[in-house]
Length: 68
Image 1 (cartoon, helix red, strand yellow):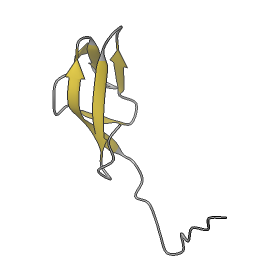
Image 2 (tube, rainbow, N blue to C red):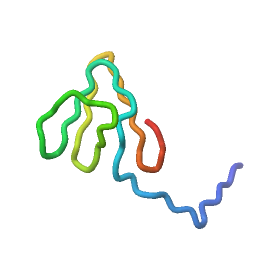
Image 3 (tube, rainbow, N blue to C red):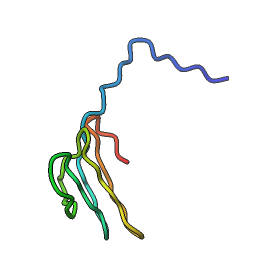
Image 4 (tube, rainbow, N blue to C red):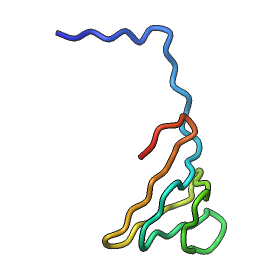
């Protein structure tokens, strides 16, 4: 049995992510602008979208420093 204590722990809300890698067909659509090719250091927030095509990948670093 494994018990974890989370007392006093509070996670920061994930409010933004930065594109740290983009391979092949990665598209970024800001909430208030047209879709375009994603660039390194694009910041994704709120209603923005990031889309990957076939055989493509994107890596994001969130404001809490987690990477996906």
